[in-house]
Image (spheres, rainbow, N blue to C red):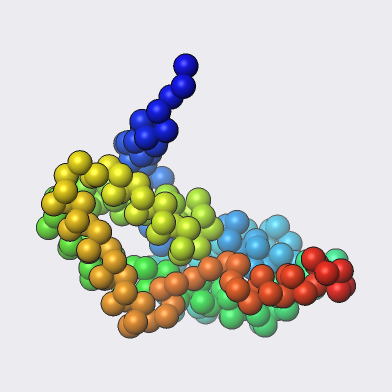
Length: 211
């Protein structure tokens, strides 16, 4: 029996929303993200950094201090063997981890200033909290990369409300308008593990055998 793709998608959306709780801490730092940014650190050092950062969730100055200390203590390791990526360079990795912390701060501002008040107005406080937890779920699942997180989160939220035109339109406008405003205010809102620069380097090294 063939299952209707739309029905399957709607079922997935509703199932995802209903099962996402608070298991993913909001604006936490994903351990897989850290391991990709510092691929040459030992597992113990990478895990300790992740633990320290997430113990200080929301304390952004303290998190930046932890990142600086990590590199000052030469815990990032040496590229042996190389990954043939920009993350072989510890300076780049340090800048990227600081950027990730700054992104956590920008995401926090987006939610506290715009999304939580806006979603509460459109729906209610409980729904706003549910959607915030859902964002945290996708944020962790997609290694803190902004574009994937926003696309899947927005799709899930909008599909859930697709039959309520007023709520659908209000939610779409809220997300789009406030995201643009926050991105203009701070470019740190948009963080990606694998950027265009990463891909360009990858194509010139690994893909073309220039190692």
